[in-house]
Structure formats: C-alpha cells, structure tokens
Length: 110
Image (cartoon, one colour):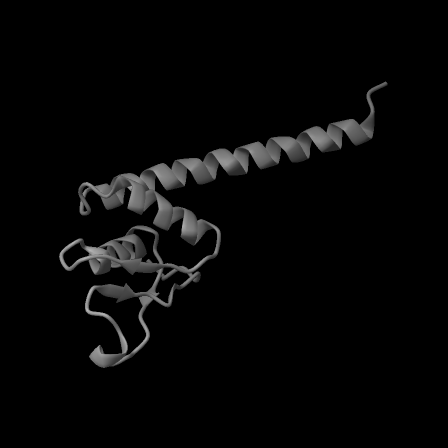
C-alpha cells in the first residue's frame, strides 16, 4: 500500500518544478524581447530581471548613452509592468544616473 504522505510530497515537488520551469521560460522570453531593443547588455538585462523576480530595487549608474532609461522602459513593457521614477531636481541627482524607484508589480490590463 503506497504511503499517502509520500504521494502528496511528490505532487508538491512536481508543482514546484513546474513553477520553476515556467518562470525560467518566462525569463528567457523576457530576455529575448528585451534583447531586440537593448544590445550588448546581456548581463545587465539578466541582473535587472533577477532584481524584479526577487522583489528588489535597483539604481542604474553609468555614463550617458548606455540606455539605462530605455532598459527600464523596455523591461516594463515586455514584463507588463509599470515603471516610475521619483521626481527630483537636476541638482539632487548626478546626470549619469537613471533613478528607478520601482517597477510596479501589478499587471497592466492588456
């Protein structure tokens, strides 16, 4: 007679594996979509996606022209999120920083 507790554990493990596989597939799709707009920044794109998945925040720093703002906008579109930046004057922030307070977790209606 099979152990009912063991079967339940296997079902939970299967659910976890399916969820992880689904998340990995979504991350690959998001990276591919973002890669059509942002070139040569694969590591930055991957780290930014991991930041979103972990519920964290990011401050993107770099010289002008590295597509920091474009990356955030593209990620928001491809992941169906909303993006926002805090309002601050030019004196309060360095010119080379793209401040992003958060990418909203609520899905936009599509």
